[in-house]
Image 1 (cartoon, helix red, strand yellow):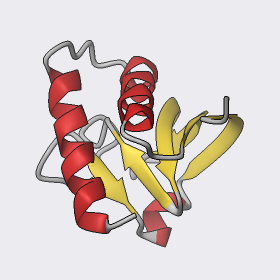
Image 2 (spheres, rainbow, N blue to C red):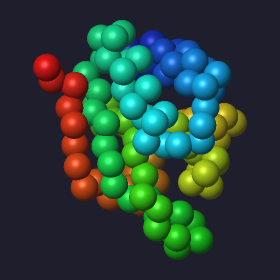
Image 3 (cartoon, helix red, strand yellow):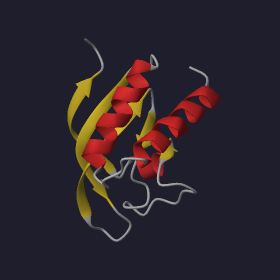
Length: 107
């Protein structure tokens, strides 16, 4: 899928989420997963841990599409971004995510 389309759809879905944002990555990832799935993306919702720059390990959820992490909580994780969300394809940041479960969009 074209990157510009993904970026636009990701931004629109995050703006929708921000209208009802409760600051919970698990809830926000679920909403992003559902929104992108309706648009035809083969996304996965992942639960695991994230290691912040300060070394703190945080239980976390995020969405993955192809080889990208679709992050709804960049601010909480101290990931540099112009918004509260970010598409991550930088291996140095991706290495800080640890998965412990996967739910795919296959139905």
